[in-house]
Image (cartoon, rainbow, N blue to C red):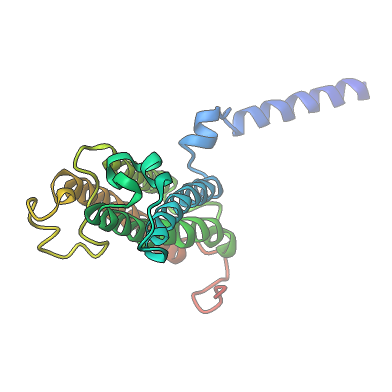
Length: 226
């Protein structure tokens, strides 16, 4: 009798478990995840990849800065027409500085500080189960990821990426005839920034909403962890 009761109890627990937790696939768990901890990891991994790209660009133009009178045949091997004779052309030098600065300021710092640490720590420190809007949180990452793809995609167009400096001041950013990268490359830079700003806005709304509405019982604004 006791054995049957134990089996029934195990069966009931199994049913409850299956009822409470829908089965997650690889795509819903790791790609289009709405879990704040997984989204933090996605931001972190994307940020690291972008940081490595920015570091490589930095090495390329600083190599030429360090030895201005030398030619580096390896540059022509990797960059082709952008570094004929082993020296980066002035326009392309500016291109590398522009994209390096853009990646470091917008994509690496944001992904590392806001996307990773805010997503990971805010719910845990407030005693909340997740962010106020997990779906908006997921969208925030994918807008960020799409912005990164567009920014990197500008390397593969004929005129090259934006070349107006990461601050994008006119006239280089405003006149397509001023420099090659100020045509389609500049348009792609701006499209990337629009998606990046939308991502940051969705993230910010989520952080503020979570802090104001989802603190655990008894935790007022003055009792929150710093």
